[in-house]
Image (cartoon, rainbow, N blue to C red; front, side):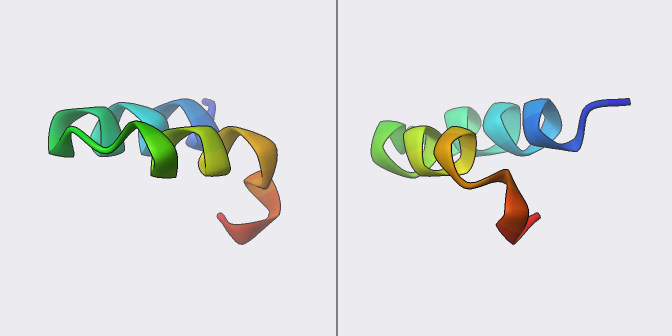
Length: 30
């Protein structure tokens, strides 16, 4: 189970690429 991937997908649905990149760079926030 990859939380980072789930969050990235959720952000992608929102159409926010910038936040998606931040989610990948800082998985600690999860």
